[in-house]
Length: 369
Image 1 (cartoon, rainbow, N blue to C red):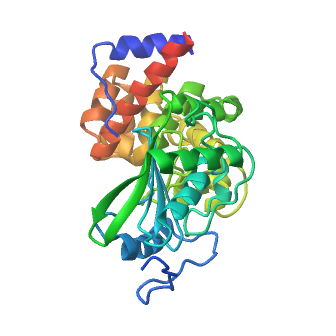
Image 2 (image 1 turned 180 degrees about the horizontal axis):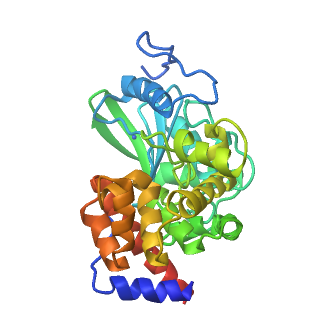
């Protein structure tokens, strides 16, 4: 690992790399234009997001609608009148309600739900307005401290803190469809590191299982989701490492797990399965799709780029013909491979992706030297 670290720093030492990448008793019936998602395990993430979006927009309006994403947890409650929104990049939590009937009570309940949200997304009811099942260690434990500076693990403390917030930090603002009541909670300064710690064991085991550098897995998760196990995207990806069931997930099931089908969203929302699947896909990239890449650092750059934009995208940055592309890649220095993938890759997102992952990995490497 140290040899790669020094080589990476030497290669990129002259580069400037930086990361780029919210009627009160409403009880929603399924709108005529929206079909409620089935319980089919292969239900499209876009269908699920569209279903939630339709119901939430009916209540909040287009301007105030907030959607779950890769670095953002959003959970609607109370007939979509109340919302919890966690911005993991900014380290902020916003709990809001547009209910005009007992808004403080609705808000208090939602704050408790958010502070005690389960670490396992399987119990979170992310794609409905149902309350999460509060069991086990809270996901936000240690990432938020109450007004006494104490971590919030138990319901009595969450209730007390929510009451404190409503008494001392409640705000209101007018919106097109009425008035919103909300509170804003600032997470602790090291909230990202707190989330990293939760998955250290899983990352270590997956890295060892597939012979993939730990810091690579850390940097991919930081880039993809900011260590948000609830992460979703319209690309159809789930969880910490943003695995797409029909592509990377199917490859892992078929080539590594030797099992038919593709992973379900429930499978990929489980942090252990998600990290295992993401690491296993790197194993496939290294030992199958990119096995002809000769230089280990060029391999490293190519694997990262392929994780985001596919092996075909990596090769097309060098030549339209795959065989000629591999020859050109192998005839290039690692520095030239990096330059090609960050300037000539057909997808702008993939060009930036390699930069972001290496920026984060350099930080993780420096911490390990």
